[in-house]
Image 1 (tube, protein in one colour):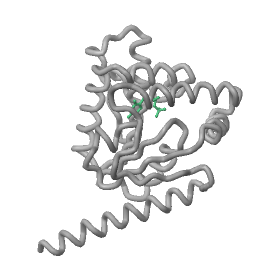
Image 2 (image 1 turned 90 degrees about the horizontal axis):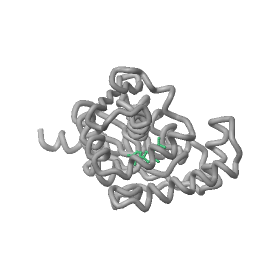
Image 3 (image 1 turned 180 degrees about the vertical axis):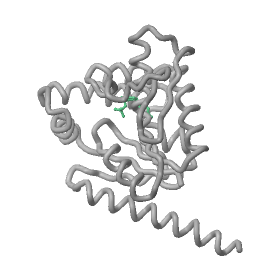
Image 4 (image 1 turned 135 degrees about the vertical axis):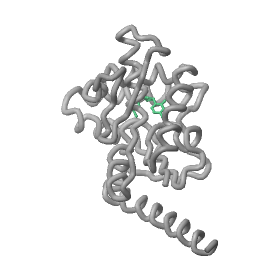
Amino acid sequence: MKIAIDGPAASGKTSLGQALAEQFGLRFIETGKMYRAVALAFDRGIKLSDIDIQVTGDERFLLNGQDVTSQLHTPELDQKSSQVATLPDVRARLVELQRKIARQHDVVMEGRDIGTIVLPDADVKIFLKATTSERASRRLEQRQCGELEQITRELTVRDKRDSERAIAPLKPARDATIIETDQKPLREVISEVSNLVKDRLDNVAGAAKDRD
Ligand code: DC
């Protein structure tokens, strides 16, 4: 089972992904953290060819063997990760790593290009949407610091860069289910996607039975 979740920053991908991973026993991979780890490595003067990123089963991110998980979610790395994500060499390296993980495990993977580029054959593809103002409020609540106006400005800059870049821009896959989350509580989003996953599992089981 491969589930792809895409959408802009603070659209609820992580909460949805974690819930599905728990419910269906899948490995949860936040690919944004890989781009954040690369941005952190560049800040430390490490060249791309010397960067090694590993993701552990309990969702920790190791940069050249060091656990950097708690250092990845800063406003500075929000922007820097989005900048490094425009670089073809960086994307090629990380897409390769993401596909390797998906070959080894059943996964729910979230990011910007999972349904379009990383896992075009994913069993279920979800694209989450929410207005900028709603996402800025959510981010402010999560981080418990900063100002709404500033967060809104930063999200807008990042959305534009992530959606307009030449390679693998943020967009829904043609076969993705698009969910607008502004007016929808998280538990409803989870339940809707969970039903899609169950349908998919039923179809797979049915097809296997027909073959027998
Ligand atoms: O999901 P996030 O906010 O942690 O992602 C940080 C940045 O990484 C995001 O602004 C764009 C980039 N990114 C990407 O280009 N492709 C992905 N699959 C995931 C993230």
